[in-house]
Image 1 (cartoon, helix red, strand yellow):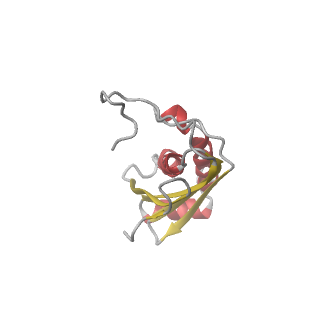
Image 2: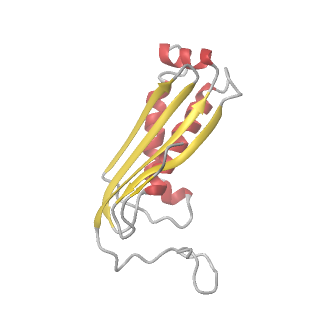
Length: 157
């Protein structure tokens, strides 16, 4: 059953009034593939716009906090923690992992997915002048804890 549709099939925000406040956490990932020279430039700190990973981390954190402004039926949440980690993977990929936490009545999957996505988009934006062929891939939920539906963990990909 799609929870964002009412009995007539119209979109609506889910009513979480009667849901218990519980600890909730979600982790999502994204990858940005690029030319090896682009990743080498990022790692060497040679980008004219500054520290690409630092800017992408801040953008991801900011995006998690603004998720309800971007996704129409998301509840505004009081996040208690947002962490965005960026690491080189091989010689042509940046792996992004975003973790969001709160004590609340609804989950934080969309916030984690938004953080990972916007961090990836920020890397693209900062590096597009030197590598327009970058691809953003594998944006997915890795894990979700808490709430009525319990624990979810993605399989290997």
